[in-house]
Image (cartoon, rainbow, N blue to C red):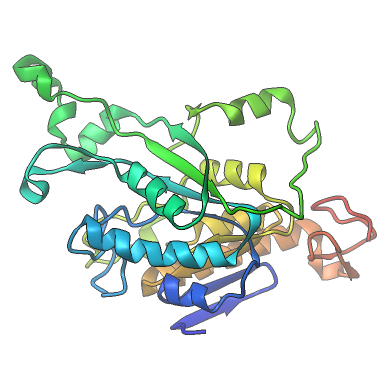
Length: 317
């Protein structure tokens, strides 16, 4: 496999390299679920590498490069399983796009995945505070003074979306839940087309991964959002992939939930921080199940357990 570095343990695997090239080295039909946030077509630029998918001259070039990743995802994802993409529509800027408005990046993602063979499965809108967006971006359409000046240019804030796609075919390992795991009130909250309760600040600590040369801030996914998707769409022991791993939020949460985390990150400082985060998650989980008293391995989760019953999934070993 063509990688710059790698870190492999019982519960996670992290690769430093180009996500398309790394996925090319993963066998067909071996990944249970993938959730990630793409580079948003140059809205956020993370490095000056030619291999950084955020470094594209225009939207068309990004879409071409992104389609290479979709082809690899289609190959490695198991039949009947899902890929979730966290995205948002993008503000159009007069200096860059020639007009002030909004570009349908979410629609582009849907089109690219369906053209790549995936089925458009579902989507959920993530509520975000428009005041926070206004303070961060100073967008003309969100300024209160614009209401008084000319509200024809006023607009709503831009929410996030989690758009989910399914690979055609039969899922041979059904994702089943008990009533205790998913009582009616929990399912109703998960089934809502708008998630109002995602805490925007509940992310992995970012400071140590910042680089003085960063053009933009890094923006890890909220752990609430990741947890909810993993809970809904994976089994214990499943492999959860993030091809734009960043500081490791997705594999970190996957490990804490008894899954196996798989991440790919190109930038060195983010990769190094993701290794530290995943090691911390593994230590936390290992401490919970007492690996210092290991006796056998759970046939369901694949993790080592100290007694006759797996303390993660309850399977008798």
